[in-house]
Length: 313
Ligand code: ADP
Image (cartoon, rainbow, N blue to C red):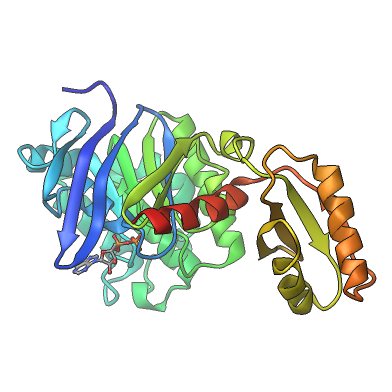
């Protein structure tokens, strides 16, 4: 038995030719907000389905709240909340009916769970009589989260909860997750958005069914190995193509309003790299651009780690 809220050891899962998960291991502590961060097809949903006992792994073992995901599936199901990637709501039931249904499935009532869900549910309660199908993306998300919490689980699994919702609802959801974590709930959440990853206590960067790195988000940028500069200027696409051909450029990719460029000379002074790139762009006839050294963020680390992994797999 493990002290961790979630303990995953060398989990593997194949779907025919596709290796959805390969030798995945990690622990999540009690009360942690843990992020699985990776692009579409990385294996995040497969991992959630294994941890919520809906799918049996081919290899390895995992425990949730000290319970084995294969042997103890019924005990796990009553103690976890799960919000799957695609909304799990019943579209032809009303908001209130959906909530009552999920409470009943777990042998409880909305009244008993109300204390926990009320900060979220209050926002959609005025629409209690509306069919779930007729809700906006943000409201559906709040209802789905209320349904996942109504039986007062000890751990919450959220699979890409912000897909298909507007920016304001995204922020609100993450505020709510922060509050839930502060109240002691363990949360495992997946996202493809780096601005959300920043809000986790720790993240696992996942790609191609493998974990690239596990660390607090703030520690991922500083481990970045190469000098990095930000290039801003007109005619961004032409600028990008030119930068990719510049001497010593390891990678160049669009980022925000500018372009991030890495230099292949590890440990080289970023100021010198910026000056050299400026001279290069001058020599190629570009003008009105700005080149500045910057500290790497989690997105940069992900961009750097991904190609290495693709080569390895
Ligand atoms: P993510 O949630 O990160 O987008 P998934 O876990 O859904 O990733 O998928 C990982 C890989 O496994 C993908 O290549 C996907 O196509 C494949 N996959 C997932 N579920 C199935 C399934 N039921 N049958 C066949 N392939 C699947």
